[in-house]
Length: 354
Image (tube, rainbow, N blue to C red):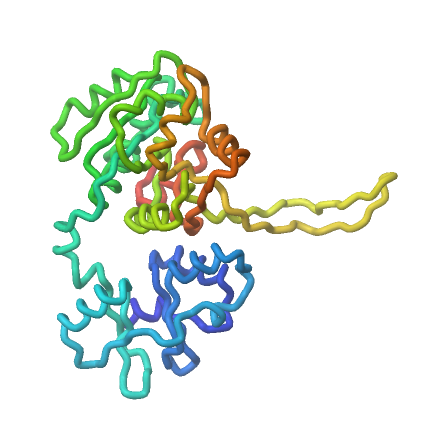
């Protein structure tokens, strides 16, 4: 019951508070209950994502977006019944309730489908990883070791990125390399792996999108693009599905980020007159994580042998009226090791003492 109580939440909590609870508990579903533990509804990360995509505020109470009529299980449920409901409804957690709708326990997809889920091949699309940068923000470490091979525990960050895509069914990877490329190649040549790796070698650094023009003949369908210094804990199958359903040219994976200005912020009128002052204001913004889904046609629009960044490509498309989508994830679903402080946070996340 302790595990279940961790995902209890009251209907008066805000969307922002629900997101923080999901991050803290590592859960994707919360059970909305009253003071007596009576189930009022459920709230999933998908519910929150759809709310955000409608442009709704994070300060609203979750009662406005929770599922008021969730699927539930009785106390004497059969495992097969739970599996059938989960597949049919596409949910990751089902509450178990008594005859008064009081929550007794819950069952999770990961427990019921532990073995089966490992065997199911979900998607098979190419993945491009931009691994050619010098990693200046992590100097002096990257003077010796290229950023993609910076270790997170007993594995380099790039291998952990690849493994997440492999878990989703991807098997073909293209690594765009330049700085210390031979060391990266030597690492992957030193052991057998159940996926294919091809290298795209930049003679000169071409930015975060410039080397994509070299892949026009190799990639023939929608593909993922990822920076080599991030880990995204999200449903990659759902990200791809979202991209295709929305018919986006590019989909950015965007993470909520909370910022607090540690000073009093002044609003000034003409002539230096103070209009207002706000003490330590806080902001919630959605920022680009560095992971994308791209339509194959994008490869035809990358200039040849020119420094060209993803932001350049996106802004060029926006100026032409092309559709660019955003897939939001929570703050803790994105780990960025591009700065030393973030690297320490990543190590802490994986319970490793640096």
